[in-house]
Length: 290
Length: 338
Image (cartoon, rainbow over all chains, first blue to last red; front, side):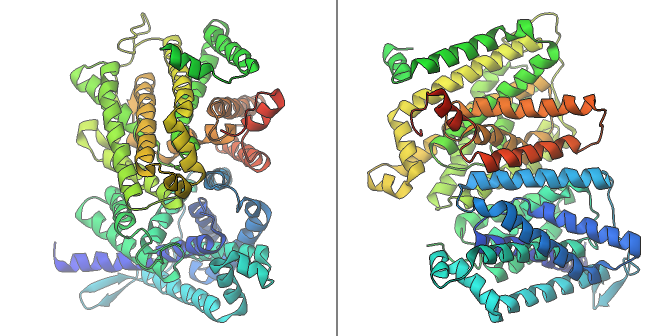
């Protein structure tokens, strides 16, 4: 194998990693503000993926354009979920929250199974087999578009949190719950908004993901775990960390798949996670919890 | 069992509890003569889940350390005993003697890394998932255990029961797992009433305060992990010999870890009855759904799981402490949170 092969795989890994990163960003936003670990994260992404596949097969709508409406649908779903089901659980112990979301995940996976059946579905875009030649590197067009869309979506979210009033209010909630209450913020509504934004991230990521992988009803749990690995690697609650972690894990998986065997690739992702937890438990860009 | 242990076991237990326990045990002891083969298998599944739930409860319910990767200990136990049996002809009980230290060592490694480096709470829970997933994929590529092709034990001849080699009919397996569940119940009760048990509760309630009170929290958390791992590993040995086939994809699956947690959380975390009651409730629910589905002729893959998930949601939302604590209060045998 030549260096070119490694370079090609590495670039593909980084681009996939950007989409992973956007998915994990959703988890990070939810945990960073609401302090709930969304154990149904990958399952929520599979909902978005099915919507994208359905829109494509029925109306031939491109997932890259549909990611905005799909993100909007997931936003509403996330808002309703937090306001209706999860909010009473924010003061409950972790194992109780865990089980609530696991039960939700079971319902999602099996509802998808009933509605769509067990077969894998995919999106066949006109550019599915296109690629760009960049010097020695051959870049897959679908992955390049998906990666670019992930960066754009994440940048919009960064801007929202940094510059908008609501974004500032949400950050205030995350920093100091009691303080936020004292200055009169409607914390429950902001929590629901945060969960909704996290769900929107995962919705957009799911839409992009259909360009990279096929969707089956039971892919959810694997992506939930992947999102944890990424977010903890990057630093729970750090938005830039989630993206960086996504790239790192995408790269690790791609190279491990090349050097060893593709089926063992997530073992290396978990290996990275264990190393990070041991030597920098707060994650690469995370701040130590007080 | 010494008289002191007996006294500690029975100390402060209301008479009603004994009546309840006695009735339950008697019913379980005579069950094989009453129920059919199908129900007997269901009872084995319930007791298996009660046993693993009790083991998990030592770590979470007593010492407050949330493990979401307990499948790793059962999986290690299953594989160690199965490999010794199929490759060297060594029986399960000696296999258990080998499995326990291996599971304990694994628990010790996870515990040491986590507790030494200050990995706690959600991070600890995810670390345990990571180890279990690591084991799952690792065993999937490990030649000595036949990797993802699976490890098969020679199927039992039902003509005679061989308790020493755990080959026999479901009734034998039923009594084995019943004995294990009773033993685990007694051990957990003794642990809870021991000096260490009180240290665990102190750590669970407030670790900093426990440390301030002079408890070596690192050491007692390590005890909790290793004891829980050891107890869980027997479940794996039982699993291997009862089902006679092992696939890493199934044995180490996060689904197995979740199943172990469901019983105690639904029944009541930290209680002795919780894991048992929760297992009865959940398996009973699943089986009821099964027969209800076939009764109405609904054969839709996933439908049962959707109802199961929805019922689970209702229980979690409606009963924050689980089923047992409110029930115990109603029965008048509640002795406060423990």
